[in-house]
Image 1 (cartoon, rainbow, N blue to C red):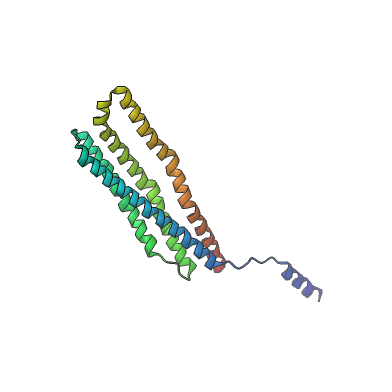
Image 2: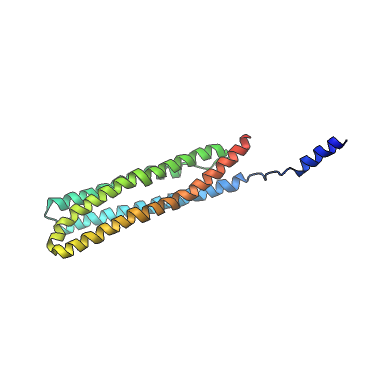
Length: 197
């Protein structure tokens, strides 16, 4: 009898983990996905508007030097490349839907994370290289008209801003976008592990 009572006492003292709320976590995942989708849409609209403005400047100002024209083409190419790459992520964001099976939704979120990491690392690096080169070439014609001192100030300000965007804004944006997604993925992985066990 005492062994049986001890077993009941041990069983009753055991801490049980609360059942995971899968539906709340899936709703949180949907919010994170929708927020990422909206950022991609607004970013693409802003980039397309910027490219249209650059084309307008090219037509209105009629640059004379070949370096200026090459610079404009490089900047527009950088914008087009990034918009095309982010549009593939956008198609995935519209296509994936939460399902009752948390394992398949976890797989979808992991694919989304890989696409965003590709955008933030590879595509953003190419974007900044093309943008910086294009700006350097574009500014040659106009800084020659300014004189050395004002031209140097223009280059310092322009490339100072690009460096600030590269070293501060880019990593901060990547952390802000990938942080909530990584948290949801971690929680879904824990739930799937609990359900498997």
